[in-house]
Length: 236
Length: 130
Image (cartoon, rainbow over all chains, first blue to last red; front, side, top):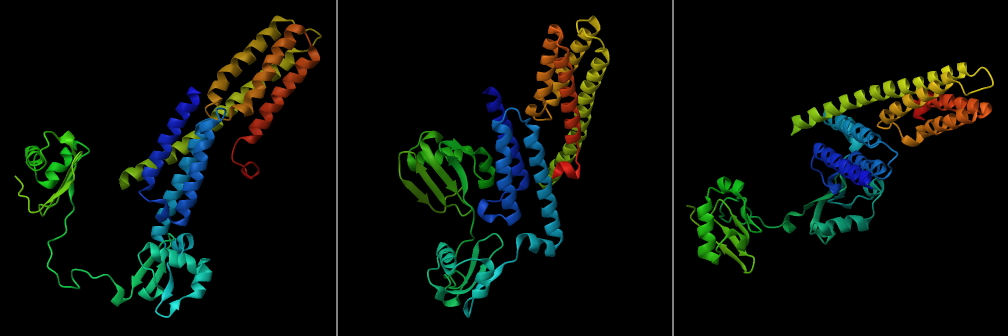
């Protein structure tokens, strides 16, 4: 049993390491050859994990081979658009200003229901709202709405807004994120004073989450309290 | 991260080359040794009796060499594929003590046959791949 436990840990670490090398892609974002690779890796990894007579190398060698193959295919697809379109396919326009392209639908082997479902997932419930819809090579639908149905933007309504900034997490579940302090241009004493003044928290442990952005907007919530937001906070 | 990935892929490639060469070397050397031990044992079995010191030492050598080689081979090949040789060696020891000549010879033939067929199974030929 101990052998199986150790083998499981070894294989898990190797597969985890291989996926890190392969890059960050979620299942829905995979190209066909990447999906095939992932399915095979999952299956290969389980064989030496449970079968003690099979050397761990019998699992590792095919895994390494597939990762090298994946690496080569990635380089080749980057280098040659023709091979890329052969391996991954091409984006196909399924809705154009004339309506649904039936031939494209047949080619992709999808139904009207599939298109409507993907559209709903993107927030478009009517075919009339859509000017173009493109089925991407990873199986996701991209939609360009009709101009009159497109969501209003600050630019289109000529609204004056502050530049967008990314909130930086300062406290997460009672832990001060020290690495983020220089990014947010604040120090530890500022955070400690702020949570004491605004939420009555005596220590970081009492805070569930605290974020701050470049514009000085702070989001603060203690573990026992409700959320609070503060604008134009002056950083010390 | 990209350079790290490329280095790791390169190392994996070298690892695969190393393990392929290593496997070929270890398995071929181990099986050839048991084949040679068996051939030597066969050459010693001339008369009707197996209860000689020479045969006894040769059987011990066969067992000792196999025990050493098997542990190295288990890193590389499925243990089930090679366990028959160990079983036959155990039988050989028993047959030698009981002076059962026919069974003794049959077991030697079995080991030669297993070794020969596994050597044939080794390596990347079209036959093996498909």
